Length: 369
Image (tube, rainbow, N blue to C red; front, side, top):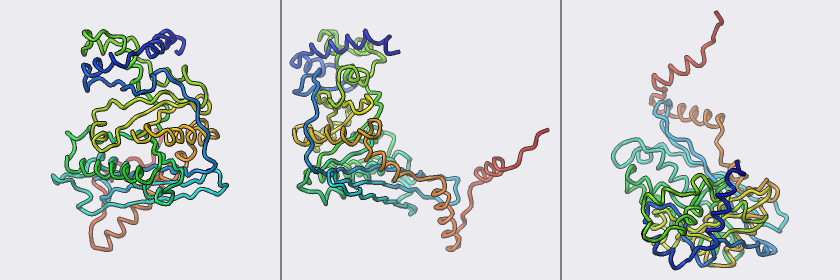
């Protein structure tokens, strides 16, 4: 499969080498918001940077979350957000501190939106995203003034904002406000922040290479869709371009949602990093990390070091995920506890007829004829 894409790879990499930043600005403006490409920064698009030295000691913070969405067929109506986190002082030899913070929501104000409908799953996911960042801000309170990197297992863009047409706007705005507020807390505490995406499928830099090849007068929807790099991912590009430990140039995230982040001083940038086992990660960072050589270098070097023993993905994030996961046994126990609590208050705690029928059919013994 890779051999079949080699001509595409070579052509795209050559296109990155010949990008003209001055003429690109006019092309990007003409392409508009519907164009999903990366925006260049002052770093040449074909750059490759070796990792800087790590400080003798630094704090590595990681958080991940999971959730149980409300089930209208269950005996009790609720949702749960569980955040797992880790605080490791690299270079100290001390064991990492781990935390698990579950939050149960069962009050009517939690379960129903401003229109009286059951809260959409997307809003719960958005609240989980804000809670993950909030946990990192909480951990960073103890590391202020010391080298610190806060990691999320995902990108930094809050995709819920793209769904604002389908979701209650007031609730979305509140989640975005909290999310941006936590980014501000982390910035004020002096911590670097990075969202790590494993096996990214983005093609934003490949789209940038294509745009750079188009004459300005030819930039339109048809020409942008007719890319010779269709099916080529940025991961494939930088797998070929980067040596182990190197990062790519920093680019600006092209999503329209990034305007909200930009207004708040947290415009999202990204780069690609080759870690252990030739894994290529996409690392998303706010502008105040991208523009600070010390913080930017810490994201690269610390992610690289923490990925050495775990096949290329940061150990801290893998451990935070393990802490956050809600198993089926825990879910069953929680549902049973809630049902018991409802019964003690004289409230019915029965599953819906549909759920009961499914359990009966699934659980009954089958006989061969």
